[in-house]
Image (cartoon, rainbow over all chains, first blue to last red):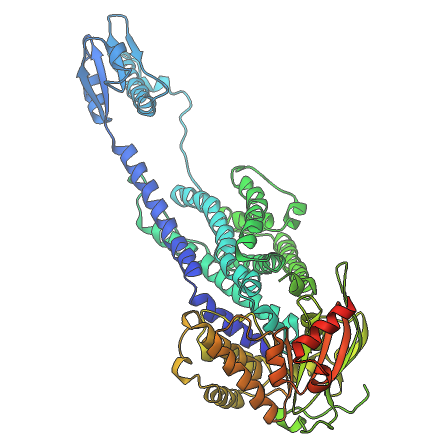
Length: 375
Length: 260
């Protein structure tokens, strides 16, 4: 058997018997749906939750019906201002000249109740004004001199879903490409020194470059599997969970799917080379983890920032930045359902170059005498 | 190279008797690690069919010498040949012909004993069909059948040391190097190692035994070289090096003391 295949087979066997790696992948697969489920529960609860309005005075006719329809529960209190501090969500005092509202902006429920109250109030005002105009023989449409008819060119639900996916998917893909194979990478590199198996391995007649390729291939496979499993579980969860009573379209277009798989392969290969190089530098698994933590933030943080800037329109030079470019490419593919060939080519070359340089760094580290002397 | 290379194939490369050609030839070896000048012109020869002792106190340079012989380290000056192959010119050919057992029993804990041995057999370049046959033979030879299918993490120190030996000899190398092999083992396991070295000698292997346990060396070695502070202070047949002293230890202390 080819030595690369021998090393790959052995590394895969060890990885699949390593609880640390399996738990990391298992958690990634379970964690995303769990988080999404909690978010959906919170969203649903927020949408359907009723808020209490403590009031004094006489509620105008018709307003009580609107309150009831929008989940605002009226409760008569002696001192609405005092009650609004804790007992109720907002306090209202109806007088002959209007309404005094009391609410504490530091309370989230008060803020939400206030928003609903303002909505109710504007509907009530509009209805009252329209009725008054009609009574005087004036067409109420005079209040809306420039009526707008909206004609969305794509499904608003799909657009909202794409916007959500273009934020979440690149983040999960990058995080899992890095963390999914990290344990395996450190075990295959720093672990060899820690277990004192490195010397025996280097005593075999197999060229060290082939040993390294076998190891990186195994780590890339796990990294890729972890990333794709996390994405698949996320998409399945999104298609089954309701958000605030609304549906979510968790479908990726063919373009987005192809770009995602290609980006996942490139990221897995780059991260694997990088983390194996890092592990070769470390004397132990724990030291490797200590090196990996800052690397994680260095690579993930800039990439994550771009997700918070929705109108960020980068020029082609940004696609040269490794990892960052994968996020941009995925965002283009998911949000706009299109990817420019130029951007795709630059990103691919950049990530392949990153993986190659990392491989040579790992090889350099793997062939130095200090590796054995220090161990 | 001073000799024509031998064919690969384990026993075919060995020849018995003290007059045979050197299996390992170390010539004026120099090596500095960091700021430490570890080897200062070490020379010796180890032959097939003998146990050659590389003796010296801790830090004398024994392990560094063995690491240069098996190509893990590159010499700064001097040369090493293993069965005619120079370590600088043909490191891979040298590695094919050498098996190393050290005190540090590093094996893969999540693989079984058998998987550990098979991995190294495959990496040693044995053909697919031969791997199975050689692994079976080694397991049988070292009496490992009872734990061959167990994960290495569950084995005792003695069993792990057997796996380490099996891994080192599975490709049937003509040169075997033992670097302080018994230092972490109990009496029974140490005894098995000594018996294995004698058996290997009987099979015509060149056995290099690096140790600071002079009692073991005196019992096992046909010839010895004593190194101290990176230099050879004595070399020859064990009885010659012992000289007029009661045992090798007294001789060793005298030589090391004289060398400063």
